Length: 569
Image (cartoon, rainbow, N blue to C red; front, side, top):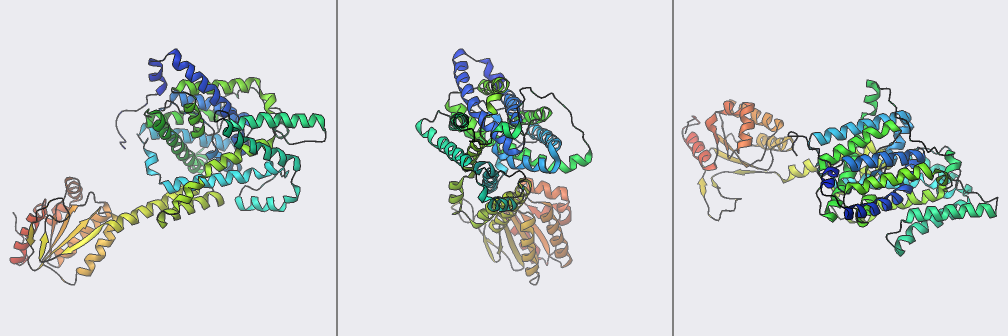
């Protein structure tokens, strides 16, 4: 990861069009139409689950999907609203309203653009896997819980947002289950599951919506008393006009309040889009420019709020659909956006007739696929620390919200990492004899005699604040012996931080007060430069920093023989 250097903004669309052909266009056209059909029910379902109109979901998929394909760094990425954002979007709307959501999404877009400009495209490598699985599984359970009302036809109009209260209301309302709604929901669920078993190219969600919408309409014509709540019943007649762009009222207070949510949207978008791009690269053999991809994702999230859109990211399922149907350039993603635009302009009256129970079934399947229960089961065999991080992230996502879950999950993962590094960093003490080649690939042995009054401490691993405390405790315990010279062997120290330097300075000063010399051995160039900047070389003398243990032992032995009188070699 390099934070400096030239801006990496090279959209794949530009390079793809350089050698474009009619054969590629035909493949992209077919893939784009199929992906547009698959994306249609998902865009509507994700919007409704997030607490906004189906129109918002389609507008987001149209504008956001177009910009991700036109400006992104992945050849086959399909962008749009995804299930991962449902929890955070619903939470922001509940706390700050739609205006707050638009501002947070635009801020997230700026954060993503800055991440791309500062070459943070490898950000996914710094998100521990247990954290990703924990919040993804938590989101899946939360999405599932939000669909029970529509799936069972409970008719609740004011469902609590928090998980525990929500299920309490469901259990108290269990007697209000509507049989026709349950039949539609279960039938939709079966169609979504069974249709792909017949042919993987058939979009189960769309087939279920078409069949069940027709069935509910037909049943209503035959039995007028038969009624299942539809999108039109819930939202009224949907508009077919693209919203006019609008601005926001900004203040520092608003920015401060929404910054954590914006950061969560940005991180979630980066993780999901780069994961999708990584999977796509593994299948197509292409190579995503991750920094350009972040800039493209950022641009999409910066623009869609001005058209009442919700957060956009790369969607793994839709990207995989694009690949399996022959899409290989960003043109397929642009065609997918055009297909959705045509549906938006000419088919909205039909969308009004879609049963809410059918959309609930779509999201229940989405939540099942997101849950990754097989992965969670496999991770139960991992170290207890990883399981703890996963469980805490999962519970915080479900019980509280995604922002807290990601923050605490990352904090726990960092603490766990530091603990492991600290445990793996060894501090050895030598006296009398020392094998200079021990711990290397050399088959020869170079045994050095260490005179009485000389002690050698070897630090094996990074010398940072966690190890510094461990080293300090060891040195305090050895103060009782009071040797003439202490050698700190640092050949296996790749870096040293401010805390370790501070502890080292204290050790040097306290040792000098007791008449004990300090000699450093095997200091690499990077560590030596850090020590020089901190003035440690002046504190102990530049000649007391040796590049090899043999020189350090020779110096220490002569100091010990001369009664701790320092010499220069």
